[in-house]
Structure formats: C-alpha cells, structure tokens
Image 1 (cartoon, rainbow, N blue to C red):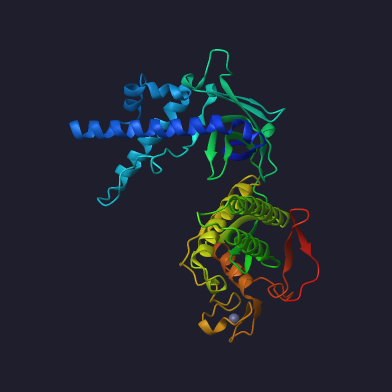
Image 2: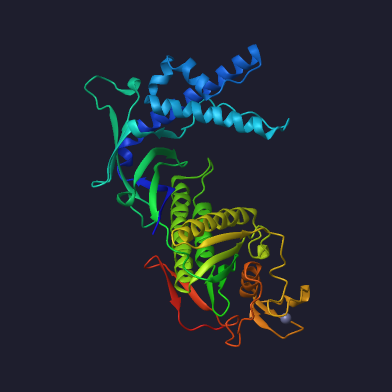
Length: 420
Ligand SMILES: [Zn+2]
C-alpha cells in the first residue's frame, strides 16, 4: 500500500488554561501590535514610493524593531508573513471597492491575534500531553524566569492523537472569543488503500435529515434531531442569561459548549457515514451542497441558516478527509445544477407537484413512493453512476436504515424499527 502525506489540523483544549492565559494574552496582544506596526510601515512605503512591501521586505525592515522581540522570532516572522499574504490576496482581487487589510484594533485595545510557533519555537511532549511554547525575549521578566509557556492540552472531539502524527509543523494559539485553544498543524502519512469498491453512494445533506445516503439497493438516513435540538436548547440558554451588557458568562459558556458539542456531532456523523459507505464497497461518494436549503421554513431565523451553512460545510470537509483515508473519492455536485429534489429517481419525471408533505415523495407517473431526501440522494448518486437499472423492489427508498446519534455514548447507532 503506497503512503500518502496529508496535512491535518488537530484542535486541542487547554487543561491548564488559567495558568497560561495571561502569557497567551500578552503574546496575542503583541501579535496584534506587530501586525499594526507592519501595516503602518506598508502605508508609509506605499505613500512614499507606490510600492507594497512584501513579507520578506517587511521582516528585514522590522527585524530590529523592539516589538519584534515580543514574540519568538519565528512567531514574529509569521505575523508579518500573514500580513504580506493578506495584501497579496487583496491585490489579486482587483476590485476597486475592496478594502485593504486593516489595523487590528478593538476600540482602544488590541485584540488577541493568533500566535504561531514553528519548529524551533515549540517543544512537544506527547507522552504527557504538554507543549512548551517559546516566549518572546521581551516577555521574560528576568533571566531566571521560564522562557516558555508550558501548556497542557487535550485533543478535542476526533479520535486522533498526536502520537499517530508524523510531524507537527506548527502550533497555533487561537483565541475563540472566550478562551484560548491550540491548533496543531500536522503532517501525517496515511495508507492509501486500494479504492475500496465499485459502488457509488449519493448523499443529500439537509435540515430535517442531516444526511440521506443511497447506495442504490440500500439507503441510510441520519435524522436531523440531534443538531436541531442542540441548537434550540443552547439558544434558549443563551437568551435566558443574556445580560444588558451583552452576553453573560453563562451565555458565553452556552455558546462555547454548543460549538464543542456540534464539533463532536459532526465528527461522529461523518465518521459513521464514511464507515457505512466503506462497508458497502463504495468507491465514490457524490454529495450535493445544500445552499438553497429547501427546509428553510423549518427554521426561519437567519441565524439558523448560518449555523447550518457552517455545519454542512464542516460535515462535508470531514467526509472528504475521512473518505480520502479509505481510498474513497468524493465529488461535490455543484448546487443548482440539478433538480435532485424535484425529479423522480425512478422515471426521471420532474414536477413541482411531485413533492408532497411530510417528507414523502410520490410520483404521479410511475407511482414511486419514496422518502423525499432519499429520492434526492438517489438522484445525486445517478450523477456519477448514470442509472444502472437498480432493483429497488426491496422498497429501500421508503424503508431506510435509520442511524441515530446516541447522546449517552456520543456515537451513532442504528435504530432497528423504522416507521416510514
Ligand atoms: Zn416516477
């Protein structure tokens, strides 16, 4: 089996947050200050000679600046590199109305910018889940003080651990809005399995059912309850505790907890979907992006729409990398190209009236009765495998295997009895 190198980012919570947050704060503020100094330098050079200095030019001109030594030199370098990259992509837009990258100001204060440590700037101890992040020279109060921030971490959600990882290329400290977390950017070798199968699976993502999967002669349904209930419950928590001066600590907690739980749910879902596909010898997954979510009325609120767009995008990218690890290719079918939800997957007739309520699709021409999301998933499948005559006499489009998220175990498990 040939190996393949891939890059993954593993997110970790800090288990000694209160001990390291002051140091991380001062490094985060320092990164913002350096960014602003770089930004100011760019303006000056630009005004003087009409040239935007690139990252290398910025670094060499600011290397001796006092603020450069607030962070480890590689970390400072990275801040200016990001600034340079931001200008390059602004320049590429070629849009007269686009604003150039701005200063990092938060009222009179500096926000906490992401700080990146490269290979010489950190020391990882995977046996004890600890990482030493080098301080900037200016950040050491005395020559006897520690020259590093000792972070203890735990990897979030996914089952992967840093011990499986080939190389950790960078460690990033990221401020989430209420606390710091660490992102380990890793290089991993994965076995490139032989393409696991000949079959194609069609997947439809949606709100009522987070995912509907069709492999032709078998179908799976992942009801949307878990994501929905969670969003509802935590939103209540947030509103119930919202103070006059913005979100209270409790609201912040609810928000944070929600994002954790959703991250876990999306990992569990994508893992199960890919495992189920692999088990059925699927070699290709065709998946549609549900931008024009037809179940919008279920939600109504704009926030929910945004939440779901984010959730779908995250779910899609999880499916992609988990499938890649099993040699299954994923094709994103562009939205709008197909009328997957309006077309009968059996006879191809397309009509608005075919959509009937309560999640059932009833075709007027061929009398197909199917779960509407599975009908769409089957159409999605046919975009890659043009309708090989499938024997659907088993009624699988009306009788899916339903797979539910079990809150007590945090895993997906089959629901045995299904009422269509
Ligand atoms: Zn039909």
